[in-house]
Length: 429
Image (tube, rainbow, N blue to C red; front, side, top):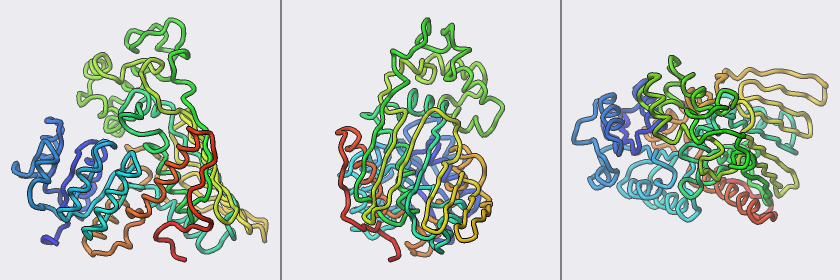
């Protein structure tokens, strides 16, 4: 270790990299000493916030990683398809890795990252932040203590949010699979990872159905224009870019996200200019997007038990909703509280988990972002990998569930993935 602080190099100073860096700064647990970011304005702002010396400020990650190691760990928060090369090179230089999810768009690339970390003896934590919330901790504790007996079935719902779908997956960076990843990998790898974590084993068979149903040219309202600023039906459209982004002004949380992805000029004039000239003003029915807006995944485990996952754009952006059915009881959770039904006494009890009500990235995913960063820094400081709940091997295994589900969806088949009774890496047997 170098000095009394864990030192960090941030590769990609967008919303995710900035958020983790600010947590380190706020808590004093770690110190950011280097940054690589291609956007000049964002790079300068980040460097000033963390008082990074000019010799450690880089426009390209290759410049940073072309030198000897200058920090204890690297945060890899580039776009999805730009993870593998900086992650592998960082591992080769001896940096411990905090890697934004998904690990990579393909299994081959994800394996390269995981193997590089193992080969070079560095810690690898993947940002499956749902594992780190107080809600998840409370739920896992109930299940591990056998409160509802053996888990027989899990039902899990992700409400992406109508405006979040429009922002990120129709108009935004994750709208096109060839440029980013499938919807299931880019957004819902969190959820399948979390379900496996809760169950404690990997599925044996997977099936899936999903399509791009609504955000298509043929669904465009009659008379609609290609840009919301010109559209005569904009006022009655749920996906109006004017309404979504102008309503962010004056709200620090919404200005941080989603507005900062659109423009750094947080004035009405600045927002309107960005909507005119950039992708975020486009009609959602004419945006060239191709990722699904609805999907279901069914899983069968080696012990014969089952789980189902539903992802939908057409709901409010809220915490995930989960029902877990066991042999001695059931649990219903909404991301904040857990309602437990005990079959023996036929009584119900409610557990408040002290998780924040806001599930968005702007609020740190219910505290998961902060808890993940803290755990990673503590693991680096102590050298204890047990502090990381989302290691490279575990995350690679649950990514394989996602790829299997996508294969099943595209081929309309049931995909056999793992042998019966497979336990995910790290499970205490």
